[in-house]
Image 1 (tube, one colour):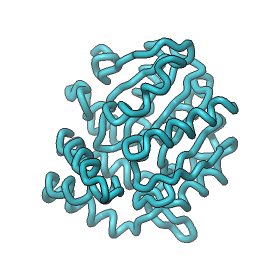
Image 2 (tube, rainbow, N blue to C red):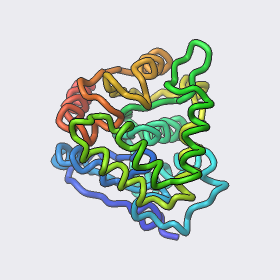
Image 3 (spheres, helix red, strand yellow):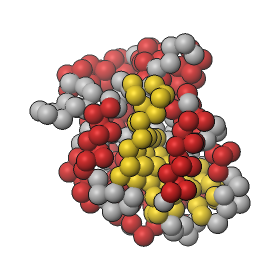
Image 4 (cartoon, helix red, strand yellow):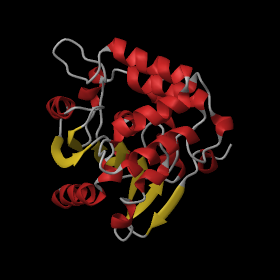
Length: 265
């Protein structure tokens, strides 16, 4: 199976340095449409869909391979190898950020910088660690997804997006959730929300920008601070934006923070 077709890879832009974008749960590469125009003149922009999302090849989905985030990280590295990418600026949203971190831990020479948008190494509260959810609350959320996925999407998407004054954003996210195969979405949700990658953080050597929203029900401010403290070379920027998807709700602020970081690096 061709890798580029498997992950619906698109390459645009005219810069020398590659910038690869990795979307989060329930989304596809379309979530980057407000971000990428700011970098087309300076970077070779690489977009792709995780297997099971967007226009990826669903035949490539393996419940065994994708039972861990490492399966998605392997895909990212395979794309980088196929396109012969090195010195990459990686941009990941939510779980896509953690996928990029895992890939950079495996092959650090390929990555120059990581831009981590509302990332989280663990969504579950654990002692003094604030992940945002009690485990029983996450289990109930996942049970609702199993019982009625469309209802789950309509209910949860606006809460994840935040910004109730712009209901079209929550509706867009719900629609994106519903475009994903529900069986694959349920497994990806479990892998996303039940993973704990805190012990992996010391392995990361690539400089990282963490973009945190000042209010986010999925990745609260404590998560951004935890990452800043436990990564070797991390810069934390708290945006004025709220919600979990500033790439959609506050793209200009997101692009400005990215540009400022990359210019100073």
